[in-house]
Structures are given as structure tokens and as C-alpha cells.
Length: 129
Image (cartoon, rainbow, N blue to C red; front, side, top):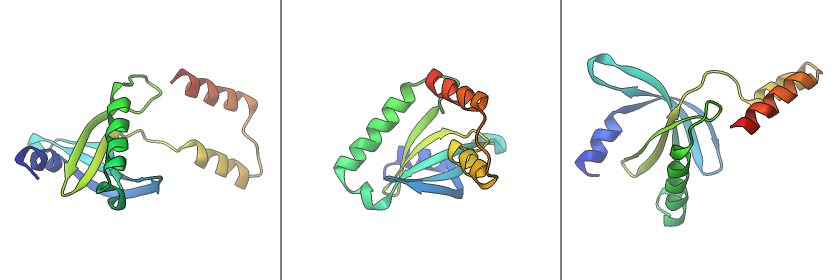
């Protein structure tokens, strides 16, 4: 790892594991800066079993490049791509709240359906993004 990669890696700290899926693990982390500056971020790591495979690294790089070009209030912003000790991370905006899967699971547990108005609102926001 070169000096610029070490510097980039030191700007972020993993705080806690969130979930895993596909070819990545998701963590809540902190962006660190001078004077004790901290900002919560999401760190998406390419899983170690894929990091050494060029085709998966390429897919991960493409995902980072494409997502960094998107700019909409309904789409999480991508801030950085970091390589650290043979690991690759995409650094993204952290948005507090629950995902749609959790909302749907809670509705099922309560034996209630999402209201048509709520469903339309969600679909319109997704389509706007």
C-alpha cells in the first residue's frame, strides 16, 4: 500500500457491522478529520474472497464510479473509494432510518398492509430517484 492509500484509509474508521449481501459487507463508520471532526458514513467493503479477483474488483470500481455521478435527494451520495490493506471500500452517505424490507416485515408482523397512499408515496420517491 502506498502513502496516499494509507492516508485515505486513516480518514475512515469502522464503527459497527450492518449487513452483508451479494459481494459486499456494509458497515457504519466515521470520516475523521482535523480537530476531532467526525461524520457518520456507510462503508461498503468488497468481500475478501472477491478482492483478489480482477473481474470483481472491476465491477466494484464501476459501481463506485457510476454511483458517484448520481446526484439526487432520493439517492445516497457516494463520497470516496478507498483501498486499505488489500480491502476496497466505497464510502457513502449515511441516512438514518429503516429500509423498505424492514417496513414491509413490520407490517406483516402486525398483520397489516401498507396503505395505498404510503405505497404510492414510496413508489413515487423511488421513481423520482
